[in-house]
Length: 438
Image 1 (tube, helix red, strand yellow):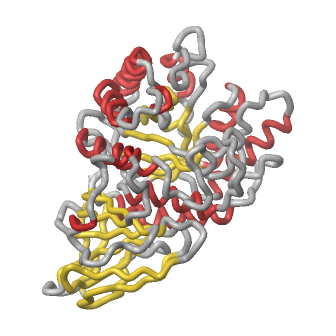
Image 2: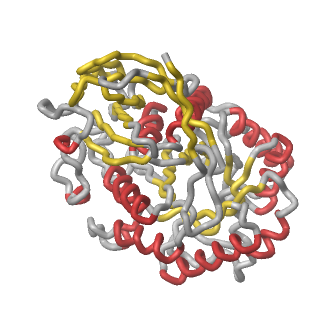
């Protein structure tokens, strides 16, 4: 069978200079967040945690809420291992949400100058979840300065996932907020986080069926395409103390949330942890989810080359997701609009699909098992007989799995996603891959 090569190119906001070559898997912060550097033990724990993050397969780590001395220890340790850092020092620049700047004066320019000698510093988190108009304007000023002075650096901000709360839970408030962020800041990428397991909306019997994470993902996906700005997604990697509902966290929950971002076309994923999850909080070494997180990162990297070449056309869910919920008004794509699947029978419960294309017209299908507790056997009928290939989560290569098939029946692990290329049966079958061209 013939094997073909197709070029893909770096992506980015066409109005900005920074470009993304490859899919990114990031960790929010491996350091002991919130702890003052009172002892050498804290520094040793930080150094171990940075190594643990890179051993788990992350491309980039953040310094997050760390004290200045801890943030610089993260930078120095990353330099030692050849890793990348998204730098933040809230004692010098930036802020959180609708709060004021944490420092008396914004010394972003000075912080950039002081860190320019470190190769590990690849970008700057300018503000965490800006909301107020004056903060959006300040983030824009910092963006423009960073782009003028060090255009190869990533200027970064993450938007607020709880804007509904600030608007008294108005269900249609999030889309205008995202539009405002994109219009005012005009960022290189749009990133948002959502940690649904344990929120007030969370019901263990419903799993992820009732979370507005799904409507927010669709809002950001559509805004991303409108503004030609790639979108990233930050998912929950552990149980959080600030969630008041008691629950037991299991890693397939994180897996389902990470793949939900990929289902919608995200070009980077960040796991949010609070010095736990894949890291042992007592030592900075390997935590309870280390092996599972490492495996997920490896799968994401295997798919990443293909993911970077794709545009998400539509996302379709079965009827158990947010049934009749006002947050999905105008955002739900009917199954009947699928271009690839026969829609005579409904999707299996807790199954979501998305359809994608590349610049050459190749068509792809993603299938996600949202059920994070149970495996599922899923049967899908094609609209037309097709050659079907799966992109391997082991090595990223295509596997020819069905020749001239009218349907496929597949096993899905809890929280798992699989990616298929769908080729018309009348064409001669061939496998393919993408290569990065600049």
